[in-house]
Length: 146
Image (cartoon, rainbow, N blue to C red; front, side, top):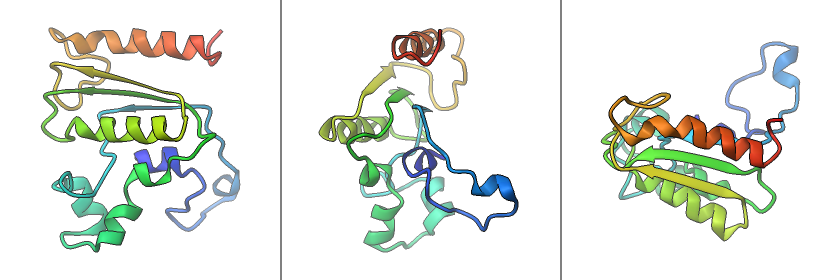
């Protein structure tokens, strides 16, 4: 879930073993076709219904929206999505990209014309097939790969 990328300290369940107590530090986040915001006009998603129900308060929608938590010093973001995604509106990655830019967080966003939702490592016959190579190069340039 994308919220875990921006709020790694957030406890979403009661710790069950020692591993749940290990602090997490993210080097970067790579998000493909994420649901970023639960705020109007992008709230009509199954994600919103599953997380905060059919009739959330305005504050609940804000609290569960990733852009609320982007801060200077956050690790870099690599975002990838298709413009024809009918599950997660492509504005989701645009919203997160803007939040990152507003907070001087390193971000790159690739918006492919075709590919829909859930294109995995790339849907054959669409331009999404290049995103794994783009991600690899992005990670290499930032020193995450040797």
